[in-house]
Length: 349
Image 1 (cartoon, rainbow, N blue to C red):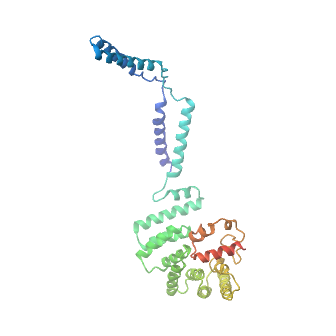
Image 2: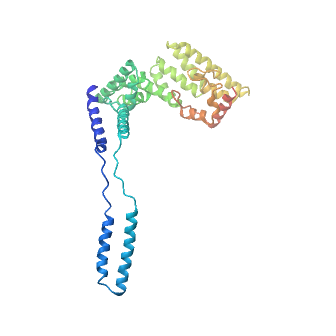
Image 3: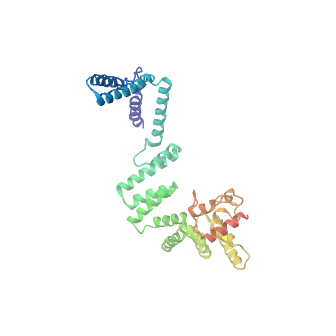
């Protein structure tokens, strides 16, 4: 790393010297204006010519001499131009300080970067702990290896590492490449299905994950997110079925999934009550699409508390979050009527 900074420092130093070099030395006066001398020479020539002229030509020449003499007198009445003044020490110091600060900022946000790094990754490494820097460096090495070998195994190793680091854009890129090379890789299909769900495409997620569990009925990760996708789509019976198969396969988050099953059953009851006019449509939307993360009564959970949240008072804020997603929350598909019913319900909590 030191060897990178030495040439950079030399370049900055040369640029600094080149910039401030013209500021050195004593003041130099501006050259005198040549126009008065030219006017005097022309007036003298015209006077000589006028002595040899007669009549109208002589009058015209004399009139021109008068105009030029007036112009010359005006120029001589103007104050003399002061000598050029070199920048003083404070200006020079300010210029040097600016160049040093600008150079430091450029170095901080552009250099150095390891091969394959982006500026964002480089900044992450700079502000990360030793463990995090080691993980990001490993991710860069795995990507370089995957690009060099370009086989399914190398891309899968890179995508899995990106997944563990929660760099889902990189993970999606890696898993897509795996499927380009090996379209039967269940790990890549499973993770792509989960990424569809996290990106707010539950229908696509359900289609992909249902194929995965059809091939491997004991894939607990696929079963968990298949249930989540069905739940987001309001297909609660299918969601409960997927989660029950998750429990039967010995999934590690049994307590959480049992709670999801209970909520899905409650949502089915709410939907039935709505049909009888007992529950608002906004509550149905909330139970179906928000409760799993924000709590049964909007008290908060994986997502923030929504009951009494100040963001509800900002026009369009909730709609923007729902439609576009924010942070770790994906976009959630719902109609304008569902969204308005949801907003009315949340504001009444």
